[in-house]
Length: 136
Image 1 (cartoon, one colour):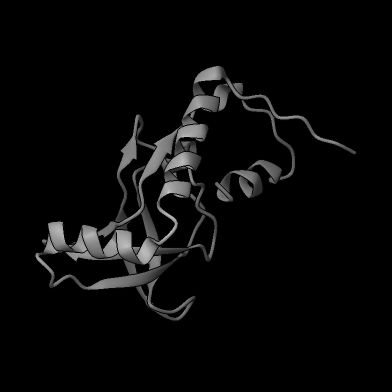
Image 2 (cartoon, helix red, strand yellow):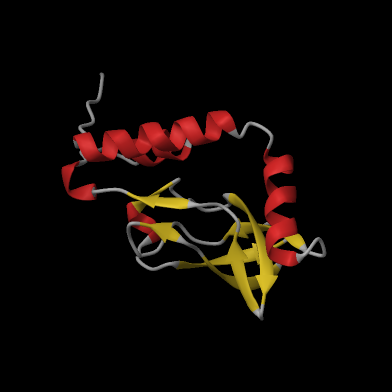
């Protein structure tokens, strides 16, 4: 049975812009190296974090540092363009999703950009939407 999803024109354009950005930046190691130089002066300490929960209704998410389930629990702050809630932004974070983080001034920051979407115009069933959006 086919499922139908409806996005507003504005959200469709946002998703297209995000996809074009990811296509232009196919080498994340090079992108992160450049980001590290501008933010940390070349001495950054980038780590992997595994989401403990699905995306919450805030700009912070609890993660495990370096290892899934058994790692040190940390709170990661995320920058969301056009919004303030991770559960209304793409890419959508789910349990065990790996994100790259860096500690700056005693605050763990996610190195990925997030884009707010208008969830009032979305239609989805049984978590199918989260699977499709996380692929962006």
